[in-house]
Image 1 (cartoon, rainbow, N blue to C red):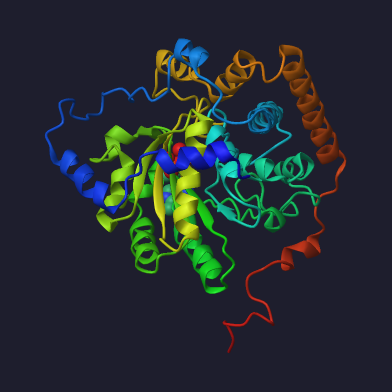
Image 2: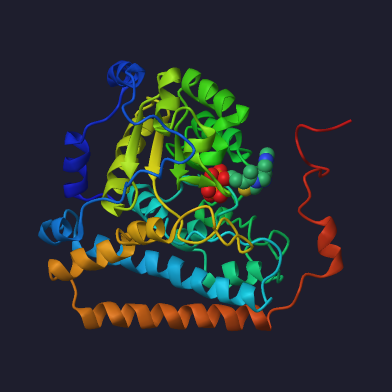
Length: 385
Ligand SMILES: Cc1ncc(C[n+]2csc(CCOP(=O)(O)OP(=O)(O)O)c2C)c(N)n1
């Protein structure tokens, strides 16, 4: 999507480029008044107060807001349903919900182009849904059915849909980071003009894979946008308990990588940051590291009661819900009526139910599928005796 308002915004918005980086590192070296410690609560990063939002003008066109609303509601309602189905043991195995983090994907999809590639970790239902994979195929994959987007062989953590540019969910923490750099290398090598956006959790940034990938991506100026979705926790462990550097975007600065922190509860901010990074990548200027400050409302996975955080913390974060913020902006600026938004909600509820019916009625993969789509194949160009 390219609209004039966005372009204007991306020209004027501040960016942490190489020269700013030095300043930011210098700032980071100052003694911190509030030293991080195990008991320090996660910082409030929820965006403007509701009152401030009410007075904000819509910064994007009506179509963009409605598309965001629809996409994010689809992600949320789809996953609400998936959570229920897991409780009924219709969906088995692992299941990590994205609820609360929807703006991280919606704002990127609106800022990028068809043909750009997406790769992420195992919290991966929202990405294909926003990119246009049918909810039927995502739900059928959760049911391990042959009609799923990974033919029922991937399940919740391994959604794939090459057609829409989704290069997968990946279960090994940090494993997708060098793959994201590799995909970007292929785009550059093939001169496609496309880029790769590579998502990871805050738990992944301490993997060695990140540092090797950052170094090479900078050295070769690869068209990649690295995104850390900082939702405050890796499983049950807070960022404050595991990292000396809690403003995670600063990790990119040691590679001179343009890096910035983004309030990812505001889809507009996500869009603008990704648009700036994409502009740089397409101009041959290489990678960007974005820290999306976000929050997951549910536990790490379905088996996590999330006892490591307080009810008050969760409520405070939910008060800044990204979908509510978009709904508010739409109504406040009269971009649509309450009835129109409710009609969208109803339509999405119907789509999600249709996806469940489709998954239930679909067959399981046949045993011979075990031997298809494996890595080693006769015509694979590199691995041969
Ligand atoms: C290499 C590796 N080590 C450990 C695990 C187990 N594990 C699964 S998820 C997870 C936490 C990752 O948290 P984060 O990266 O913050 O992502 P989030 O779940 O918050 O999206 C861990 C340690 C794993 N899957 N892979």
